[in-house]
Length: 378
Image (cartoon, rainbow, N blue to C red; front, side, top):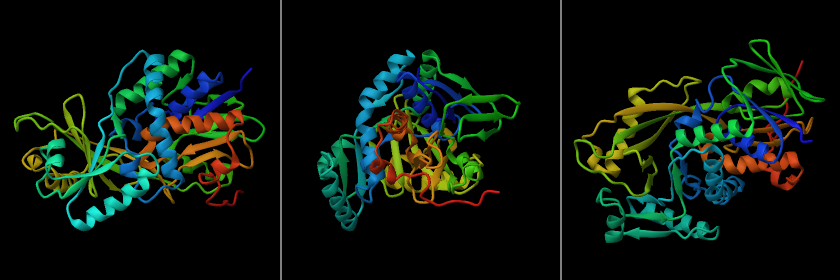
C-alpha cells in the first residue's frame, strides 16, 4: 500500500504534485489556507517560454524549464482527460524584439546556445517580421523567433487540475486560514486554525511565499519572498479595430500575449509590496508606457481589466526542490517565482520521483532546499 502524502498549498504546484502522486497510487491530501489557485497561479499569464524568459544561459534552472516545456503536450492532454474539462493551450511560438543593432547582437548570442539545447529559433527582420506580426512598431529592428514556445489560459488550467484531483480521489481542504507543522521527523502532523489535525507519512511543501514561515520548524533558511506582479488586459478588437497578435511578443520591458477569449494580456510590472495584491495606477502605467512603443495601436486604448498576483521568489532565483536531510519525509517544492505554470509538470515529476526513490543526488543538488544554511532553533 502506498503512503499517505500531505501537500501544503493548493496553487498550481501543489495541485500538480497531488495529481501526479495520485496517479502513481499515493493517497493524497491537499491543505490550502485560502482557495485553490487563488494567488500566483490564477493570476499568471500562462506563458510556457523558457527560451524567452530564461536568457542568461543553459543553467540547471533553464534545463528544468525546458524539460517542463517538453512534458506539456502529453501533460495537458492528461489533465484534460482526467478532469473532463478543457482549457486553451496554444503552440503560438514567440518573438523577442530588438530595437537596436546592439540588442540584435545579444539575441544572436542567445540563439547560439539555445540552438544547442533544441531550439529551432532564428532571427527574423524586415518583411518577414512584419508578416509575422503586422502591428509591431516599425522601429523594431529584428526579433528572435522561437517556434517551440507555447502558452495556456492559466485560470482554466488550474481549475482543470483541481477538478482532476478531486475526481481521482485527492482530498482537498480549503480556507484553513493557518497551518502548523507539529510533527515531521517520525510522522507528519499538520494542524489547521480550526483545530483539525491532518496526519500522513510524507509532507510536500508547496506553499509559495508562505513557505518562509516554516524556517524555524525545519531549522533551515527559506528565503522565499512575495513579489507583486501587476498585469493588464485589452480587448483585442474593441472600438479601435482588430488587433491580432499571433505570437507571444517579448521585449526587455515585458510581454504581450493574445488569448482565445479575445483579450490581449500585457505584463508584468513587478514590485515588492509584501503580501499586498492590490493594483496600483503606477504599476499599470509602467506597462502602458512601454507597450505602446512595442505596439503603437495600444497608445489610445485603455485596459478593461487589471489584476495582480504574488510571485514567490527565492534569494538566488532557483526554486527549493527536494527532500530535507534531517528527514526525507519532508519534500520542498516552493519558490518558483514567475515560472510556476511552466514548471508545474516538471516539478510534479521531480517530487513524485523523490517519493518513489528515483531522483538522483546530482539532480537535486542545484535546487537543494538547504542551500541557504541553517537557522537557530530554540
